Structures are given as structure tokens and as C-alpha cells.
Image (cartoon, rainbow, N blue to C red):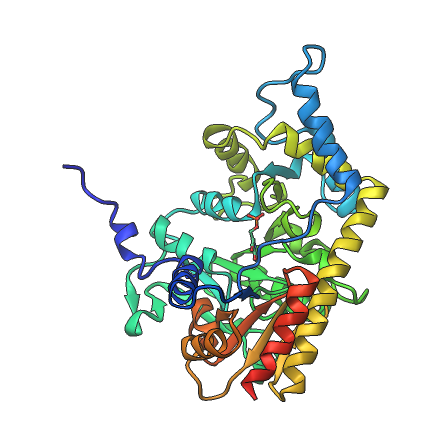
Length: 403
Ligand code: PLP
């Protein structure tokens, strides 16, 4: 018999979203014929727009003709796409050979952890996207669960709560470690401003640490004063890796296309280059993103494609406004939803799984219990704006049953 990886045994419960799906199935089985509306998972619902979709179709058609067929490509991605991301999205703030194309931000977050291994100290915003925590446990950078399963040994949780304006106490950042930081944030929907990110970069540089900056929702930022990339902050290129994705901007959740920026200025304590090692990891255990997906990514970055991104994100922001208005009408206090597709709603003194069940039973609406994102999420519910408009409108009416 082969021994189980002890790190897997450390994972405390089912991943949050399969657990929500299980409870939804259970409710549906007990209430046949009832239409359940999901404002739960962050999965896109609207079709890919025509210009970007045309890029995908052309990518597929190219594979079916001998003159245009391509097999494996460069593991780091198409040069044209790396250059276009550097030029169009980063306006030259990063070089094309610092951009590595991937099959999505989630997969890259997992692979990036290989750069640092099991001995690394890591800090996460609390609440945060569960992949930073669960990935750290899988690689052995965090140990077994403590406090009744609420937190993991070896991880530093940085509370982001109303009292600190959802921005953490930077003194808590561990030295020579990693800080996972997401803005616009999943789940709170809060976007950190320029001053806050400048303080984060300064603190991280002072500690000799590295930021893994997750900008998967940057296309939802409408306030021009808010930074969309960590590289807008001076000094970030020596201490921040940025992960990003076409999932929520172009509707590519099922297509699978993202990228990571690993600047050449970042070094380990030993002085070796993180960019060189990342190249090595990509060429060793990743064989590049699909050529069809990359053809779609190139189209998404044309002027026409950028207009489509704007239209798609405007649509989901419209949903977010409806949800936030409905909650505020019920005098439920919320943040997020204006520069982000998530709304973080406060239910003081309530257990978030209980609120989840109440909303499912009274409204037949699925949401996400805040406790799944970290201990400070205990009294919160995350509402996601990903849904068809008619469903979101119906869900907003049904939320009135919470009165
Ligand atoms: N990062 C955050 C903060 C997310 O919320 C998500 C998906 O919900 C991802 C990354 C995953 O993105 P991808 O589809 O590119 O793997």
C-alpha cells in the first residue's frame, strides 16, 4: 500500500463550493419543482461576445487545416499574447518575458507555491479566496487545522474587517514570507486604494517578503483613481508577482486562460532569480495554455475585444447594483458591488451557514457563507453578481422574504 500525502490529510473539510453544491442538491431533492437561483459561486453565465468568440473559432479552425495547424507551443505562451498583455494591459510597466500565459489564475496560484515550498511563512487576508489557504496546506506551508477547524497552523491571518476599512494591519506580515493579497477582493468586493497598496509594498519590501497579488477582478474597477495592477505602485516590481485571468473579464471560465507576471527584479534570499525558476516550473510541469484559448485571448485584447470586456463587466456590475440595492432596502449593511462583482453582507451575531440555510429555505436563493472564506467571515454572506438578469431580478424580489 502507498502512504497518503500527509498534507492532503491536513485539509479540514470539503472545498467550500462542493459543500454548497451538496446542500443545494439536498434542498432540491426535498423540494422537487422549486426553482433555485444561485448568487453563490463566481461562475460566469453570459456568452462570450462575438469578436472574442470569433478569435476562439478562428483558433479552432486553424487546427483543422494543414497550412495553419500547430501542436505544442511555447510553455510560457504565444509571444504575441505575452507582448499584447504587456503592452495593452500593463502599458509597458512589465516586459513580455515577465508575462507567463497559463490555464487560469487558480492553477497558477497552486503552481506558484512550488517556488517557495513547504518551509515558507504565508499570510492571507481574512477573509480570502480559499485557494491561497488550501494550496498552502497542500504544499505543506501550512499545517493542521486549529480552533475547531477555523484556521490552519503556520498561516498568518490578516483580519480585514469594517473596523480597519477592510485593509489589514501590515505589522502582522511575516518576514521573508508570502502575502496573498486580492484586490478587488473576493469575497468582500472591497478595492484597496493607491495609498494602501503603497503601504503594503513598503511593508513587504521592509520584511523581505513577496506579495502574490491576485488581480482577477481588475476589469471591474470603474473608479479611475483605484489601481488595477500592483505594478502601478512604485517598488512593486521588486516584491510582487501578479496573477490574472480572462475568466471574469472575457467570460473564459470554461475556456481556461490566465497569466502571471513574474518580474525579473524579484530574487530569493539567496539572490537567485524567481523569474528563472518560474520559467523552469512552467517548462517542466506545464505544457502551455491551449492554442485555441490563446487565439481567443489575442482577440479579447483587440480594441473591439476590450469594448466587449467593458460591456460584459458592465452587465455583471448592473447585477451587483440590483443585489446591493435589494439588500440595503432590507437595511442589511454591505460593502462591495461597485467596483467588483461581489457584495459582502453583514448579519451581526448570526452564524453564516445558518443564514445560508435561511436564505435557501425562505428565498430559494443560494449564496456563499462567509465562514468559508476565513474566521472573520463568520457573520457575513457573499452574494455574487454572476447570473442572468432575469434570475438576479427574481432573486432580489425573493430576498424580500427575509424581512
Ligand atoms: N482568483 C480569484 C480571486 C478568484 O475569485 C478566482 C475565481 O473565482 C480565480 C482567481 C480563478 O480564476 P481562473 O478561472 O483564472 O482560474
